[in-house]
Length: 408
Ligand SMILES: Cc1ncc(COP(=O)(O)O)c(C=O)c1O
Image (cartoon, rainbow, N blue to C red; front, side):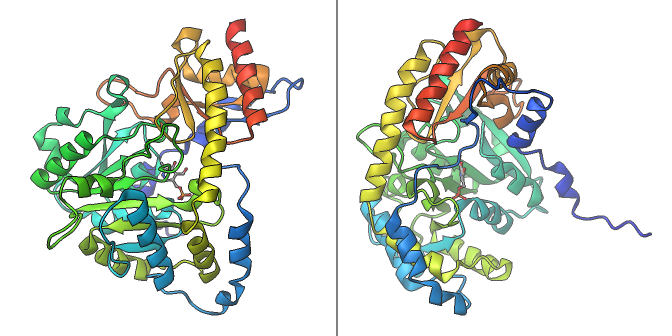
């Protein structure tokens, strides 16, 4: 039989962190005295608001037509309106500056395939470290090599971009930014953005800003968005507004609809024109009932405030409990605690394995979310806890973790 080689870049893909976790837990029987609680997977668990479900059901007639890749005008207008209100930015043209996507995950991946020319000069795709694993897979499958810049705890987990040599920058074609960050919860400042825009101009690369956690925050000021920062730095007007900048956002976390697969991409009209062309061929059109439900969701903030209040309650109750046994702080935003467990004397993997075995609580070892780069794995000795379940379940998990740490 002839052996047919498929795309060799597929062999570069790393196993997903949850696969690594499955291997770590293989052969372990969790203590049957406890019911299972998972803080491992970052999947929103609050209920989907009824008005979104209703909008979806009332739009079922849309199943009888093929949707366009560009999405409906009312959906693009709803997204543009949300962007203007949320970020206090000038009018966003729904025709050229907004593109609905089927969740930000597929769009982040597809965008790299659209932007990166893998045949040109040892292409690099840069991302923070730790990072959302899609960035890495997107880089490999575009024919580029990922380049990781370690998030530094001393700088509120901002990567030290100033330390990157010019020789590296000259090869970077795409930079993934994640703000609020997964897993760190850190939000980039205006100064961080000023530096990134300058670097992008000097070295000629595109910035993809992943902002899917933007609506879950704990202080009074909502996280700064990339378009907002660009506007404040005078980059929202002229012949090419938001040049070389595209943001990715999503309803999954904001509106508790991870199964709906609805998000958008917005920013530089020239890049979006190319991305629309790419998507016309890849077939990324959003189903009309999902479009109708998305319009309802983007036009409402009450349910988002309620959602945020629930997360705030959980984080305010749980963070002080855990602080007694590990080094952990309330993040700027997002729904993760990114804790340093060195005080326990256990490595991140040993901590996760024993916590599962002895207390039936699942957390994700930080080293699974990062790569060894510049002499260290910045996720080592950390664990990620997704506070996605109910307040009661979160508290129960926290109490078990405290008991576990005290038993060590
Ligand atoms: C950092 C980050 N970006 C993007 C996504 C994708 O979200 P969605 O595809 O639901 O919009 C996730 C999901 O967990 C994430 O953590």
